[in-house]
Image (cartoon, rainbow, N blue to C red; front, side, top):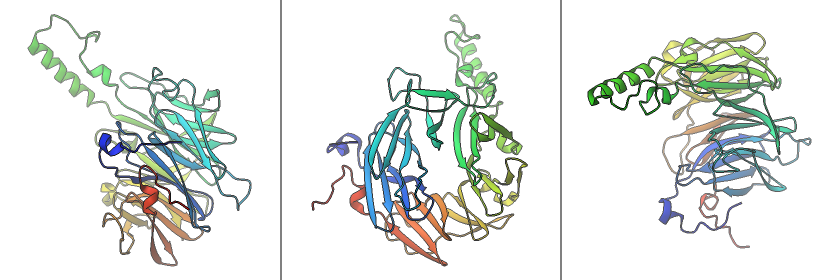
Length: 386
């Protein structure tokens, strides 16, 4: 996908990649990860795929900031999976044992620099098409040149911007969880020529006081968060706690969904949020007030317990409160602190992916550390000669 780039350190400074997104297929044999240091002046991402049985890695590079990666359904359990990922601008990349493919969502900045700016956040395989979410009320289902809007009805009222959509994931029954965030629109609170309150002959002191009043008024409007479940064209809005649904800085968020073996789904997020329920019957909060300072970013269900990640810690959740459950291992590389970016449960094992380019596994009560070969983290890629 990408060649050259020998002089990148002269242009952008030291390359400091982080493992910031990951995905596991149906078993613990295969995983994929996005590794990079996304920054606006140097978008560059490594896509790594690993086969734990064959002990092999494969790598693809793109000069884009990639936001999400998901495994594609396979008809064979023993087949090496392919993965789909999306860029900030609207590129879709499919990588797998058969090579790489690149697609572009029509009308996006991936196609033209003059297209409307949409901040793409997530992608999800749905039947034989892609469900894609982003800013500007972008929630569409499609493939190739054919795309249709499948966003739930969610009016944009003054003084808010259009919804920013994100896809949390899917439960074991195939129901998809999506989130909409609506923020106060900055343009209503900036004094500029064309603003209803702007006058070209306005004295400087009056202009200053008006700007201050507009900034203060913006702070009175909370950020709105809405959760929907279902499938494209059949969405149901779910009730969220008020502190999540309507919040002022620091803003709240929903981060992940996972399921247990009894038919329950769990939603986790910032401000110590843990909810249990089903899309049919709704969700209720089961977390405790003392955990409000924890901001959960991922969850997995293992051995009858919910496992949560937040900041630099791992927790077991006993149904009411979270207890520290950080890997007790001798860290071999990089930071001495565990920095979880994702957690998965597969086949009675727990897998923890770390921003420091490490993977930890919990097997029969014992933590093990696995490192990614250094040559796979180099930029440009310097493959060993046969």
